Image 1: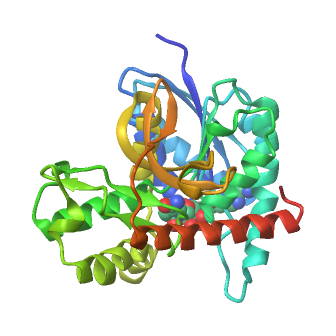
Image 2 (image 1 turned 90 degrees about the vertical axis):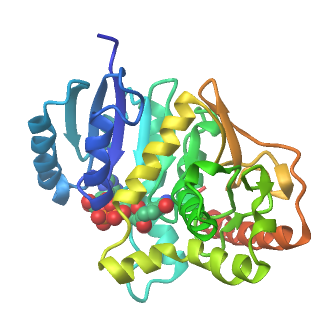
Length: 324
Ligand code: NAX
């Protein structure tokens, strides 16, 4: 059997972790012929719950799962890691200001970035899911100066998948007929799901829907879907978030022509260099590359700028807290 790939999952005892781990162990993250070794990182109070999940993983007798390690020490969890899914984060509590939230998460993602820098494998790929995902990814990346910056990404694939599903329902087409969907900016309510480059049946999607629907229904429905799920389910998205994390890493490793991912900006499309912002990307040879040369109309420009402005403010806030 090939050498197993070490996949580290933080927040492993949480609800996304519960939906994610079984899919990784079954081969859906990396491919059905790639053995994996799981490392579960939790805070001390949740290690026992992670042990329970590990017992269930054992009980699945997954042929590709070569071992499970459970720890509350980031240095152990990231030692030799090839893929890291940073899911555990500090949730916003009632009355918490944005600065408090960013500061609390800096206390998690700074040390995790350092541990990745010192202990991860040379080919480490990092996906940050825990919110605020883009800025948490920036904190981890800035604390890992020896790791190439493009190995740090944040997840907007759930937003991308939500956009596909909303558009497919509107036009009554299978999701497979939609090409070139893009989420721009921050994984937050300011994100911009773009129908001016998406195509359905070879024609631009924005030309096949009413502009009022695009502006007043589609964009807010995609951007606020997380809140709608909480309202309906009494808990935040978990299985769909896990599914999106699987899609993100699978495509990163195995290649894709077009998807959305938050990656370190090289200045493309006027997004300041260094911000971790969502772009249209392709993947080849284990690397994401921002798709270049798209024309951006005035409506899209305003939306992208608003979301990027929010990311810039978040970056300035964590910089002033000394987190990056
Ligand atoms: P849960 O509260 O169920 O689980 C989080 C887990 O993380 C807990 O078990 C907790 O003990 C653990 N944890 C906290 N601090 C940790 C640390 N320092 N090291 C290791 N583990 C730690 O949350 P869940 O529903 O699983 O969501 C996890 C994160 O994903 C949240 O931040 C959430 O906001 C975010 N999401 C991001 C999405 C995205 O599209 N980027 C969508 C879904 C989700 O809302």
